[in-house]
Every structure is written in structure tokens, then in C-alpha cells.
Length: 170
Ligand SMILES: [Zn+2]
Image 1 (tube, helix red, strand yellow):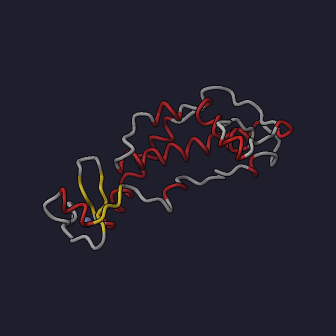
Image 2 (tube, rainbow, N blue to C red; image 1 turned 180 degrees about the vertical axis):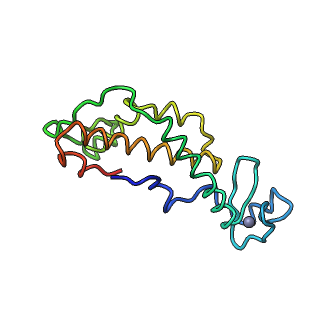
Image 3 (tube, rainbow, N blue to C red; image 1 turned 135 degrees about the vertical axis):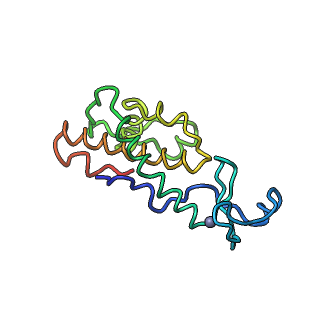
């Protein structure tokens, strides 16, 4: 079962940009927030078009997490009844078939992907996030985590314990 905000760990928010590239577009390669010189890269945030150091980026992410989680908790929901997962129907298309354009499979992962896009308001909530901005990325991560949690909870509630949930991996 996912814990709140799994996807924040191990993710980098904003776009890490080498100093040389920053110097081509900005006067100086220093953090817009604390003024520190960048060591190897600055982190670009499309919101305001600013570059931050790692510390200030991390502080910004940390400050956005509570509101993003609240937003996700308030808004995310199932929009239709989730169909049962039928293990007997499982099949995966072969890599060669995939290369030829076949995309249809029926596996726990394809079921979950369909559940997210077709049975929740995930697409509606995420379509307006600016995915180049740190804020947009944090909100996106919070919504995605919450949606996956809702789907897992629903499956666990509706279908025999352990049959599908423990096979799910996101
Ligand atoms: Zn800084």
C-alpha cells in the first residue's frame, strides 16, 4: 500500500541545468533565492523563470507538499465503479507485437493504468498543471499518489483480499 507522497522521494523536481547553459540566458549563475553560486547546475523552475540551488529547491518542494496533499485529498475521487480484475483473462502482447503497434494487454499494470485514466478524475485534475514548474510537478505527484491509493483501497475493499492488491506495482 502506498504511503502518502511516495513519489516525492527519489524524484527531482524542476530541471537541473548546467551552469554554462544558465550563463547563456542569465546574467549570473547564482540562486535567485539565497544568492549562492551554483556548483554544477541550477534548478530551473518555469514558474517565474528562476534558477535555484538544491537547498532552495528542496525548501520550495517541502513548502508545497502540504497544500498539494490537501488538494489531492480533497479532490481525487473515483468517477465510476471499478470493474473487477479477472486474472483468468490475463495476457500480455509480445515485444515483437508491441513493436508492430499492438498495445493491448490485460495485466495488473494495464488494469491500473486504465483504472487511473478511465475510472477516476486523474486526467481532469492533472491536465492543467504546468509540468515544467516545481509547483505543477509537486501537485502532479501528490494527485498521482492519492489516485493510486484510492484505487488500491477500492480494490482491497471490493475484491478478495490479497488476490490482486499484493501483485500491484506502480
Ligand atoms: Zn538558494
